[in-house]
Length: 317
Image (tube, rainbow, N blue to C red; front, side, top):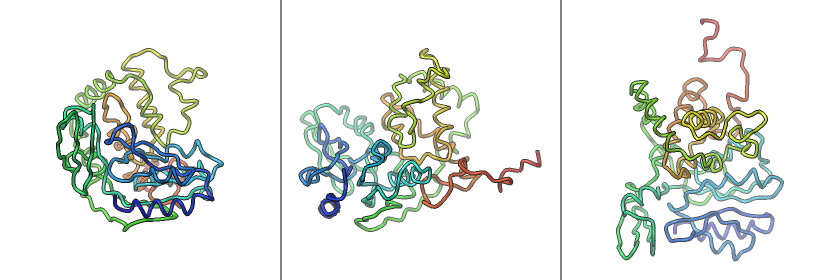
C-alpha cells in the first residue's frame, strides 16, 4: 500500500523514545482493520494503511495521558487532536503525530448492503479506485466511490492538519457546500423532522457506543446518562429518554465535534447521528465563524467570552 513502508520506517525510528504508537492492523477478517498498539518493531511490522483504516485513533489519547504516545492520523483524526489540545486535554510535547493524506475510508455497512453479508469474508484486494471482496465463495468488485463513508464526500481536510512526520503529498479538497445535507433536511416541515428523529430514537438500544467512540466525550466515566447524583436520566427504555440523551450529547459537542463520524459508524442500529452534530456545527460556523479542530491556536467559541459577539445582536432584542 502507498506510503506504508515509509511510514513503518519512520515509526521504527521514533519508537525508542515513545511508550506506544497507535495505528491499525488487520482485524478478525480481511475487510476490517482494528487499532494496533505498537511497542516493538515486530508490532510495527503488523501495521496497515488504506481505506479500511476507519477508526479515529485519537479516541485513545486522553486515556494515555502522561505517556509519550505516537499516533497515525488521517485528516479528520488530526482535527480531533487539535481540538483536544485547544481544550488542554492533551500535552503537545507528549505526542508524536504521523500524518498521511487520506483518499477516504469505506463504510462496512455499505459493503454489507452491496454484497448481502459480512459473514465469511475470505479475501479483500484494494486498489486506488476499488475493493474486490470475496465472501462466502463469491467475488465482487466494488467502487470506492460507491462504498465510501458519506463523511468523506464532505471532508475539507483530507490531509493531517498537525503532524511531526508527514508522509506523502498534502491533498487539497474543494467541495461546494459542506452542509448541504443539513440544509436539505431543514427544508422539511417541522413535524416531519420531529417524526423522523422520534422514529430513529425508537430504534436506539442505549448502548452508548456513540459516546464511547467519540474522541471528544472525555467524561464518559461520569456521564449524565448514567449519573445517579444528580439523576438526570432514568434507565426507562423510552423514546423521550433516548432523545434527551442525544440532545445532551449534541449540545456537549457544540463547537467541538470534528465530524469524524465515529458516533454514526459505531451505532449498531445505524442511526444517522452525524446529522445532529453537523446541524450544530453549521450554527456554530454561521454564528462564530469557527470550525472545530482546524486551527491549533484558535479558541473554541464556547470556551471564550466576548461582551459583544459579532453575529449576536443582543441589544437589539
